[in-house]
Image (tube, rainbow, N blue to C red):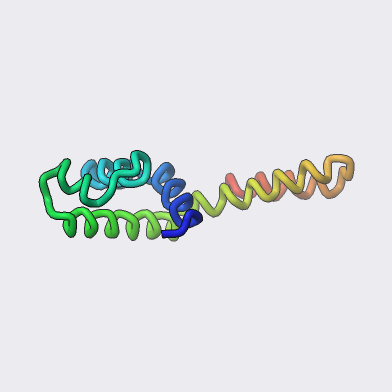
Length: 108
């Protein structure tokens, strides 16, 4: 998994972890936050490495589905882009005002 994909999954996990089962939350936390290997997680739970792999893949798929339906990460990224634009355009009142209106729309 690329670093970019790992960062994305960490962000999705931070947004949507409460929608996962406790088992999924615990395994993803060990895998992504504590950097445990599949083998280490399997040993911890006394299950097969394949069972851990399947649970993590199902959990990742669920996180992606939550994002597709709710779009919290996408909205956050769009807000970040607009805030950067706003900082660059603070001296241009009309452009700054337009950006502020766009930001307000994300929360509606």
